[in-house]
Length: 87
Length: 347
Image 1 (spheres, rainbow over the protein chains, first blue to last red):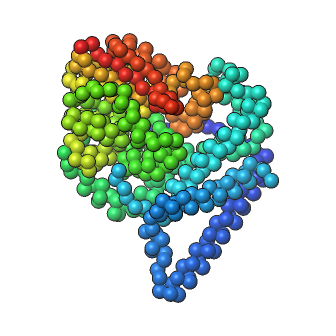
Image 2 (image 1 turned 90 degrees about the vertical axis):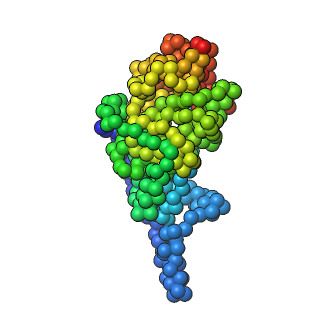
Image 3 (image 1 turned 135 degrees about the horizontal axis):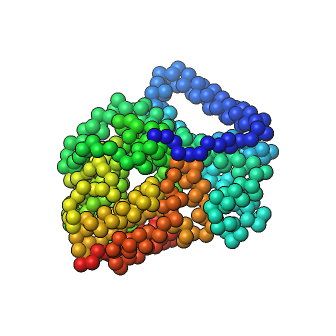
């Protein structure tokens, strides 16, 4: 049993710099979120709220899911646009 | 639907895969505009599909969003099932007992342990690592998490309503006994049960894990589905024992020689006056060359080794060759997807 998809190399060597840009763009976005999460958890813990567990068990309602989807698309576009090489 | 709450990490990772796929689609649409600007259109593309791929790749060679599109598509093809598996693992301690509890009920599953056909056992369809039966709860992972949280958010329209809609092709036909080839996790079986609430439904599929989920779905709905691990081309059921033989979105995962055998087996199983209804992806012959290439590109890189050969088959002719009459073969409006073949066995 195996994956039937043909082998290929998608990104040409010339894309390496663009890939590095994309990775850094992603890391920057990730750091903003991680910083915010640590601040939030600390602020709430100082007030006796275990928000980490609450987040784990949280299910978005449709309106919040729409906000999440929009923010997710913005993040992915930031990475993909860097890879596109569009300045 | 058997809904189980995921942890934030699993939910967000699945959402991310949806976003990656949508970003790829936006680039595909933009690149098709560039193709048009450069004179490559449905009218100018070559007839041969491999030549079509080659021309489009050559035309877009200097277009980096086209490369990004391929990269994003490949990522989501490889990763979507993995993140769903891992999302399930995060809640398995709660989810597994809940699913196990649904194994008891009126729906039954029979597996005589027969060897699976090579066209199925040797392929990781949809680039699913390890194949459909790779893990104990793969039925839930693919039937619910992949299908409802990923596929249904990527493809246009209500993919569950489409299953109900194709049954409108049967008009007011009444079936007492139904066999479904390629039951998988039971999404279409639900539509069959709604349309024929009093019928006996037999479901056949080579994947035990998918049928385990179908059994849970049937039990949750209070249905008595008779599910068998097996294949449509050799069902093992008696001659002239059912009124309807049907399937949904399975032909593209079969080699053409097996599709031909499916029609013959359907004919054998049907009582005189019985009906055939098989729905699958659009026929390439009904699409313009650009639209057909679009499907073929997704199939080529999405773990669908039989899509092209099956989509090039004339399913209406296949049904007629097996003996069916009053055969209609057409796409369901407005998109032409799915494509339905309906026929009747002489009464």
